[in-house]
Image 1: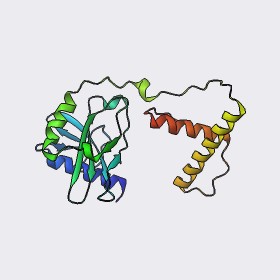
Image 2: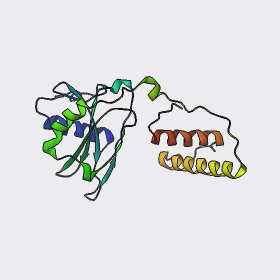
Image 3: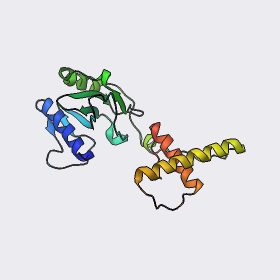
Image 4: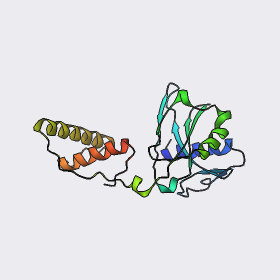
Length: 194
């Protein structure tokens, strides 16, 4: 199942569970920061497919920006015959990973959405989404330089394998370091345009 189909299935599941909700993307993707509106609450659904019954931890793709202020997140792990749910509200540093033991019982989902909607969180600013790591001159001894270089090349090799680019020309150290810094920053919720 494609990522788009998984997302659409998750949106449908949440829409069907919330009586009286409006499924914004039912006919076509509208590129709004939310997928479902229920009782005036804008909800962005993030879905993941349970690959096996033993899956216990899920990572969801979450983008953060000012357009998401006030939007409630509903995370859905889609299983065969059983789905798992978590809620949150968009904010800087929102947790993307969820564990099955913290999943909500289905009957608690509507109340959890209301609670998340009322949660007070700092507004996301444009600065939060466009934070750029500024290059600083740092004196590195040869040992630390070589260690950083090895990590950057390892990450670049992983990237090549993931993207299936076997014939990609040799990557410069600067490109490798740029990718390593971007990957590290994104793991801490900082988006870098590169």
